[in-house]
Image (tube, rainbow, N blue to C red):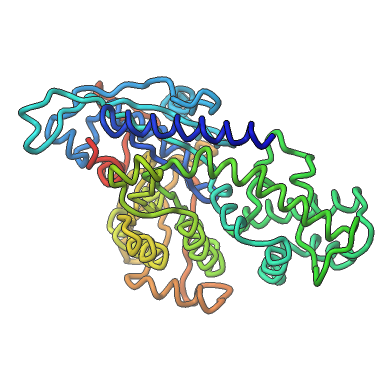
Amino acid sequence: MVISSLADSLVRGVESVGDRVSETLFEPIIRLGVTGLARSGKTVFITSLVANLLDRGRMPGLVAQQEGRINSVYLQPQPDDTVPRFDYENHLSALTGPQPHWPDSTRAVSELRLSFKARPSGLLSGLQGPRTVHLDIVDYPGEWLLDLALLDKSYEVWSAETLQRIAGRAEAAAFLHLANKSDPAETHDEPKAQALAKEFASYLGAARDAGFYDCTPGRFLLPGDLAGSPVLTFAPLNVEGHAPRRSLHREMARRYEAYKSQVVKPFFRDHFARIDRQVVLVDALGAIHKGPQAVEDMRRAMADILSAFRPGRNAWLSQLLLGKRVERILFAATKADHLHHTQHPRLRHIMEALTRDARDRASFAGAETAALSLAALRATTEEIRTHNGTELPCVRGTLLDGKQAAFYPGDLPDDPAHLLGPARNGAESWLGADYGFMAFAPAHLTLRPGDGPPHIRLDRAAQFLIGDRL
């Protein structure tokens, strides 16, 4: 077993170095991770990004396109044979078909490869012909990213932190009642363990629906083929001191460690550790609508997310020998089309304030970071409506039930502190303000040849994430 493990590690290392030599010297590969928290529009973002890179008529902010250096872009089979392909064609059909609708969310890791034929810029532009640059887009659930913070925590520490954090949440009442009745020192009983895990998973689902972001372990929400397995049959308990043999405490701790070693670490090794550019999508408007506690929870989640990255610059030698670092991280507030464009700068300032701690830590470590408000697929148009003698900047779109509606979501504050202050102080509601939120369906589209789907600032996001490599 030891020899086999060493041989496998050696083969992995040789293959990895070979891949890096090829990438560094011949055809560069940009490995872009895309993740999001709770209905942030990750699937729509990837679908629209790919469509707009294939047909670049709406991408003036991508400098290589503006300068005419991109000869062609085409889809290729993804390089990882064991990773599902991102279902781009069906997702695009859902968004642009005769009866447009939002595509189903992806439930696991998926991947897509785009290849660019582009002429280099600068002094080399007149000496070299077009070169091939590959963009590997890796789609993974945001809940899995938050799981990486568990690697440094024991079961006892995780239990104490989780129980303290959820103590006052109504969504956790049923689980806490069952957990408080359970004696961790008693002999392990499988039906009791399953009941605790089931109630804890129910709490996590309810907490996510209520706007909380600290919903770990993430596989409890997206179990896939692990549903019902022991590795997903544990829960936090009030544990103290030594865990007796065959006790509920001992078995819960064993399964927690198995979750880290058999679920979290393989994700980190096989997918996350290979990413060198990252976009984190955030439904900031949805959190604001749900209230101060959701906003504060999202701010903390942003800081936790960044703790999982290895930020820094990918010098060619360090990339060859030590593996990739995340060079650029974009925090993007999605659904900007739910606001009139006059409020977009305020949304961006709020996003910058929400991610300030996280971005400062990444920048200090040598990574470039940015915050942006965008809409990967524009579903609304803008109009001004008069109400009680006041002109209100509204957006109009098709609701999920097919009806047309004009909507004024409220006035976001000029100073983000007016939101973050009450959120940090534990306020239960916004004082003297009301922020609305409405779910729009995709608009019917008629696209001209060469144009991708309409968007807001998707070209600027692409320029930040990959523009320097084209």
